[in-house]
Amino acid sequence: MPVQVSVLSNGMTVVTETMPHLESAALGVWVKAGARDETAHEHGIAHFLEHMAFKGTTTRTARQIAEEIESTGGDVNAATSVETTAFYARVLKNDVPLAIDILSDILTNSVFDTEELKREQHVILQEIGAATDSPEDLVFDNFQETVFSGQPIGRPILGTSETVTGFTADDLSNYLAKHYLAPNMVFSAAGNVDHDEIVKLCEDRFSAFSNDKTTEPVAGIYTGGEHLAKREQMEAQILIGFEGRAYHVRDYYASQFLATLLGGGMSSRLFQEVREKRGLCYSIHAFHWGFSDTGVFGLHAATGEGDIGELMPVILDELQHVGEHIEQKEVDRARAQISAGLLMSLESPAARAGQIARQVLLFGKPIPNEELLDRLAAITPDRLADLARRLFSESVPTLAAIGPIDNLMSQREIGERLNITSRIAAQ
Image (cartoon, rainbow, N blue to C red; front, side, top):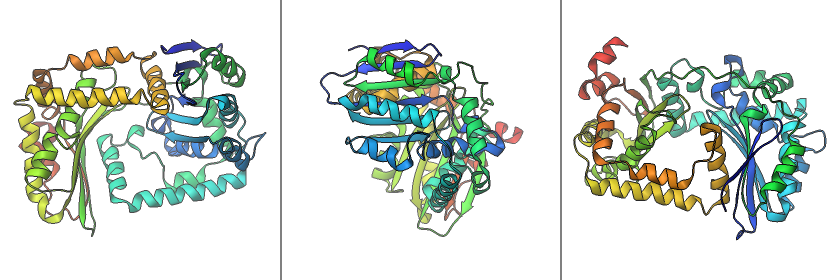
């Protein structure tokens, strides 16, 4: 069944994909508002709102929200990212109306009770503490802040203890009124669903959202830099980054492809050279984060203190080698990995609902899988090698590390080895 799209009278988009062979459905609301849409004093409020939405409405208590959905065998949850916030549910096909009612209730009728607010502030302070205690979580936060120094897009999603404890019910209501506007919202469903029925239910349940448009967030500008934190622990957590590509630029898909080839699995270059051949680390992988106006290409490794000195030159050698030559069989293998992941996601209603929702938010329409596969088919070894040369030589590197890092190469030394000294000097 093809993906169907409708726009409600207030400008909210409804997108569905019917999978009639299933007995269940995944559905939710995706909002184009995340951590980068916060002001300095709102730092963490997008995530805090995600929590508080489940803490009681004018028609349901927090317990009733949980019990109503779970009494049907379903579940409801939410997630906050840099650019979006999602509220979603998974239910049996006959319980889709209930799920829509609960999702609309928590987004339109939340009361933000003072006592619930205080309790949830305490919960999130524990979440912040847990992230701080986890070197792997903390190094990624430090990395993001260094990549986009001094910018909203670089701030940790959870916020700080100071900002979180300062939030009031009015702050939450004001943020919601400012950013949760119908043109920036997508209701997405996949599974055993009826498009027309969902459109009718959404028209009724989500009509309260304004059709105003929000202002664009502060532009993200890659800065690069260094953030090192020495800690007494067994492993060092190391991240190296470079300026990546935004969703809308030509090299976005090629960048995702390159990350898979370099460090996307056990057959990848970095895994084979660094772990399998030399045993220099426990884990290593490459990634590419795309945003609406910028991106980050990164490498993450976890290793012991005694191997850091040898590890870093080997990684940097691989970054240079991939720009010199890529074999067709490597490209074919990476393409198979990405294509398989894409096609396997079609079998999961939850994955599919999120995928088509994000596509509508980012591109204004769902992207047919055939088009995505055609884009992957057009990627060649020469194109990837050219991209690698530009990625690893044209931007200031980012280095973030935590642990026993006395022997770690500096950001400047990384730049010198990759022949980008002049850019670091000008920073």
